[in-house]
Image (cartoon, rainbow, N blue to C red; front, side):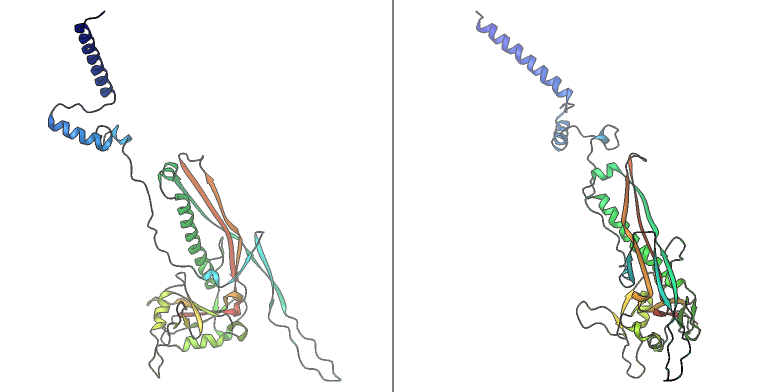
Length: 349
């Protein structure tokens, strides 16, 4: 049987062993050692804030444990709306092109009497128009770590951004495209005066002054030159600078502005009773050079857009590890199908 003194010595030895074990545990966890009161205060504050001793972001070890700020939102760059796609004719195809058979000219006819056989009349010439589907693409890479760490869905944002860029790219092609590996824009065709019109060319009027629309007569003449069957559904397509110039035009007798804003909420712009579509793909007015900044006509009958399906997305996380490569494509085409339906106005001599 142990004496009270021996029991006290045993408890003291056990306490020393426990203290040594705790000290070794603190060192293993790399917890602060309080050498002075000031250092103790600093170390305690760091320990409460970080759960461990403070580590510099420049330190190789510390940089591994610092929490980086995560991406929670992206401030997107504003883009101009693309409205031209809504006004031409549109068709969806399952092949690589669209074929249209249409009349070129009209079938002749005449009057006959009771006893005389009328002369043979000409039949309208038929022609075939082929509109191929061209391919737009975007190829971009994004790191898998960024995809994992971002709060927002970066792939979804990237697809929205590509879709917006595709809309701008296609609108520019429908208006200015060369037809080589892209749709052919209506501004790329040869222009002639009214009296020289022939199929395959567009009628153009000139204002007589570079970069300026001097009066409203040219607008009235353009509207009156469009044949009656095309007037229902006709509209203006112009650049913002041309629209600003038109808004300055005044009636010579009353002094009132020719353009009047819509009186109904949500009503669009109109000119001489026809809607206005603004497009940044239309050439801007230039004071030192002619520019075709305005077009008028029935684009639903005059221009044809061809869509070959929706977006195609190829996601490749293997070829460029640790980057994920996205390859996005869309196939479409476009071309003029009726040259009588579109008229051009060039601000130039």
